[in-house]
Image (cartoon, rainbow, N blue to C red; front, side, top):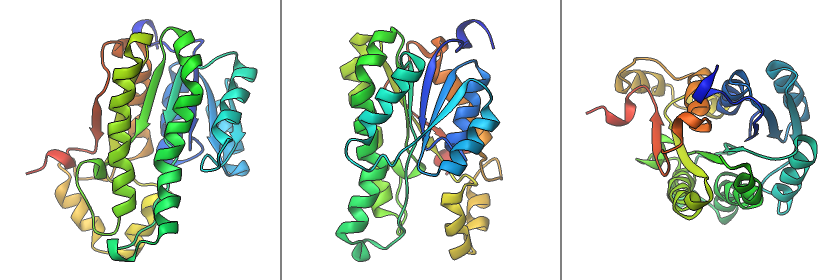
Length: 252
């Protein structure tokens, strides 16, 4: 890529970047020329992701739900790459239960992984994003940032929080030259949705009937939107939440 879409020389951090949507995003950023730091808990998956991304990529093993992990990750990226231009807050998990069955432990686990980790990573990255002169924060929400499902109360609440948190970043950090936007995936073929497809056989038919493009999304569908939001082409776009869902969220 060239011109306004060129990410050559820029450093990107992608949490949960060793698989699924995160790896799809990392591939898009790498293809646009960025150095990519993949952050994930699984060392083997991290190594595989780096091998797939190529020479301008490295991995950091971390559980971002742990206090202090975000600060360590950001410090390591800065030490290895010299700075940070792009932060993608993608790490997350889900515990599927009806609202009346959600425990305090379930709630805390989902919030820590999905929402609190994004706050900690953004806070730690802020001075480096500001220093870059073209900082970009991309937070991964969900279609459940918009509407609800009965078995995902904690997940939906965390992803709704992601959108509001992103808007706060956009307003607070705009004067520092930092943009902040959210991507809202629809039904995507990942490890996270594999369990839902297994437990709810009717889900596939429902998804296809409600999605105008008549297919499940793929991690590769996120490469372009991530590269765009990370690039100079989106310099005057901030505070948005963009569905990437094949039209699911606007289906009547």
